Amino acid sequence: MECIFCSETAIKLEKFYEDENFIAIYNIRPVVKGHCLVIPKRHVESMLELNEKERKDFISFSNKAIFIALKYANANDFDFLLQLGENAGQSIKHLHFHILPRKRNDALAVNKKEFFQSFAEKENTVKTLAQSDMIAVVNELKDIAEKHKIQINEL
Ligand SMILES: [Zn+2]
Image 1 (cartoon, helix red, strand yellow):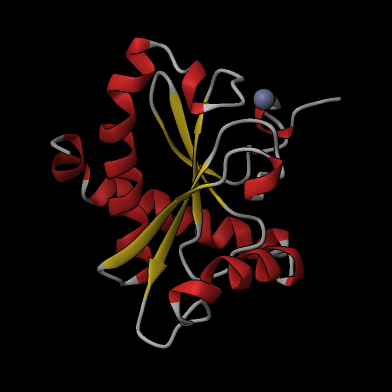
Image 2 (cartoon, rainbow, N blue to C red):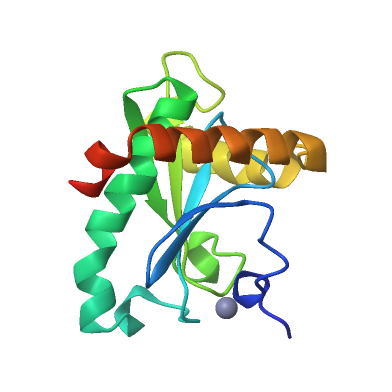
């Protein structure tokens, strides 16, 4: 089966940031404003398969993607979520981390026990972004990356 995260054309529209090993895309079904994904370019299913270089670069790249997502969502707080394996809710079998900017009383504001249930439900029910909306969001994310590029490079 074709892996959607390995297909450059499938995620071309959503991609707003990348380096040698990772890309950051906007989620087609954003559960909250600024819901992005950090994805290794190489097809790996698990975190355990990342090589030394990818492991080293991961935090730095994630910091940059988080910085951009938080600016876009005008938020300071976030969840950084990994669902690894079917029983943890991993739907696409290519490693990816969710960046979820958080605000008081947002769409995921429930007690911690209900959080994962709420996240899973919303992931399946929230509407897919229209292509024109996705283009507008990704352009804003790219603008933020460009505007803050000096600061982002230091992360
Ligand atoms: Zn893949």
